[in-house]
Amino acid sequence: MLNRPIVILVLLACTAFSFAPKKKERQSTLQPVGFSLRQLAAPADYNWRGSDDRTLSGIVWYPADINPAEQKEQYIGPPDAPLFYAGRAAQDATLAPAFVRFPLIALSHGTGGSAMQMAWLGTYLAARGYIVLAVNHPGNNAVTGYTTQGFIEGWERARDISTAITDLLADPRFGSKIDLDRIGAAGFSYGGYTMMELAGGTTDWNRILTWCDQQKTACDPPEMPNLTEKFKAIKQQPDVQQALQHAGDSYRDPRIRAVFAIAPAVARAFTPESLQRITIPVAIVAGDGDPIAPPADNAQFFATNIRNAKLTILPGGVGHYTFLDVGTEAGRKQLPQLFVDRPGVDREAVHDQVGHMAAEFFDKELMPAKKKS
Image 1 (cartoon, helix red, strand yellow):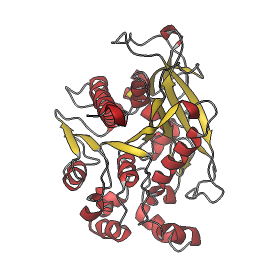
Image 2: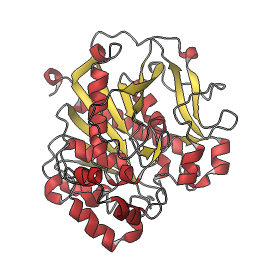
Image 3: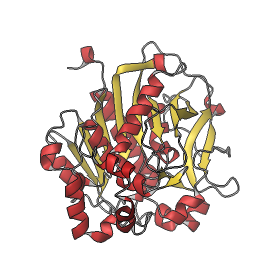
Image 4: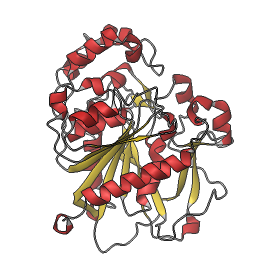
């Protein structure tokens, strides 16, 4: 989740800039990474959640057939003072050849974030043989802006992911290279909620309203001040009423075989019974120092109610924003609330640990069926 002033500073979130190398790869077996910016096709009746920008945009990271030296440092923000470091990759590089098709992982960003703010995980997985697709959720991202509906109609995020997967599978460049039986998804914060929708959980709108009546501040996030009042002002609009009628629909995508949720939020949207219907593998990781999506109310609630869910709570004061891209020197000075972690917390080390956990999880759960023991 990001404050509105912060969003203005990162409106260039899908722009890549080249700088001097940051560090050498730790493993010689890693593949170079390519990336490609995408405009994804959406149906004519798509719910844009009040956004004036009627595009579904995103980014693809993938194993590239290039010399590692051709990768460039990617940053987010103004060219003269970027705020986020987004990993090493080469734009529109040739896809690496392979004897088998690549598995696909779809990524969902947190509230106020962007596809590029999942770069730390996208580049990590791509270097290990995955094609990775991240999408900017309409009405709730730092690229095309915020709307009240974009915050309220969270169940539509699952449809964004499913639509993006369908589009990429039809893409002439990537589609034929993806293994249809090896598709997973991962999400951060509100993107963790999105994972539960994709896995088969369903939103209980009345449950959310009851919770908001009891915890008013939790339903008025800093990214969208007075969200509750803003929602009341538009809730009778025909498009909002139509969307609310589908809040409790199932958005399970049967193509997705496993999901990985990072610091998942909005657990109160789901009843235990809804989560108990999830049957695909679910892995959850959160930090013990997270005040935005406290693990006891979110990650642990999900893990308790999802059959065989694997939960990891990272110790040592790991916070919510630790799971954002690494901040530059300028970012740490301008936005310490996002980029300065608690003493003893090494954000890059946490990213490496969580990236390894995600890769290990997907390697196992998306293994070709004939090879699984």
